[in-house]
Image 1: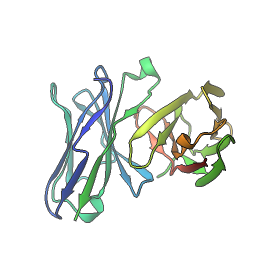
Image 2: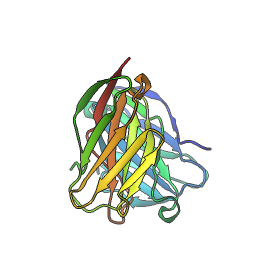
Image 3: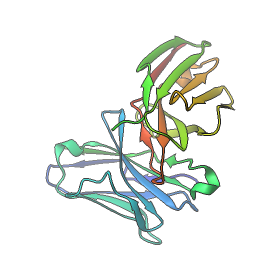
Image 4: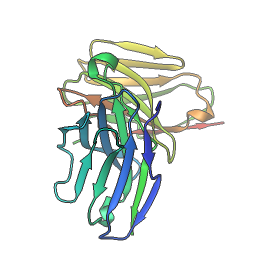
Length: 116
Length: 111
């Protein structure tokens, strides 16, 4: 597709429940990124993939967060045992190989997670 | 830690005026990008400027980059009410490809 597609747009979970978010990158893009935006301003990098391989996971909380990008499937971000502080907008983004596009990164519309 | 820091945090202008937003960063970069975020929406890519470039234009947008001062500015000329949004700068450095964002400037253009 020509845009980064994220689902669901909105998700409400009770504390302790699991949340799973999906992302389909732009066709032909080999890098996928997940970012967390809290309080409508700060963006926190979580993880990136180069194709199906984890490229950089320095932003991922170790205990409850996991992510995958498998061939022929949407990428996913899963939060086990959600906490109130996980409430945020989760953005997925993608880009082509660096040398081709100068690393322009395109973002999806985000998935709004509310933990109650 | 935040790499880019925008100022001002909020800016309110009248339609037709120019809006200038600034961004400072701390470490060497490969590229700097500006994004717009309308309320409740995703990020829209505006412009990318590479570390070896000093100025770039796109329509009513003009971006400058001063690597010696580690700063960039985004100028929106002849602003419109539809330009009302938050504007973020984001930098990437090293080989990680990830972007590090500033906290954004909230621009309000009054009709």
